[in-house]
Length: 111
Image (tube, rainbow, N blue to C red; front, side, top):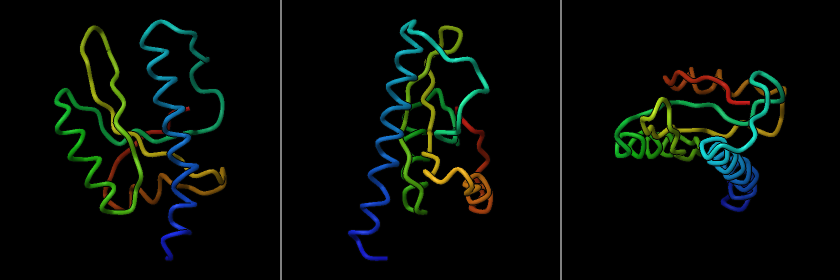
């Protein structure tokens, strides 16, 4: 696939991931949260780690296999975690989770 086309495909995914990261940060800082389970899927969480270097390793592995993700810091019951998120494609009819499963990754959708 030509580089220009790959870049054109990546930009919307990176925008979605940066929005997701900002919303996660807002939620962690006490901002308003939407009701769980509503809305469309914006990303898939592929892993969560106490050690940030493990999250970075998984994110690099995903990138090498063609998945574009980011690491989002979350706080759960006073513990910091680093979650690895992969942006969902803009096409709601594409079952991206099946692609992750076929590549050997378990994940769950983030709305």
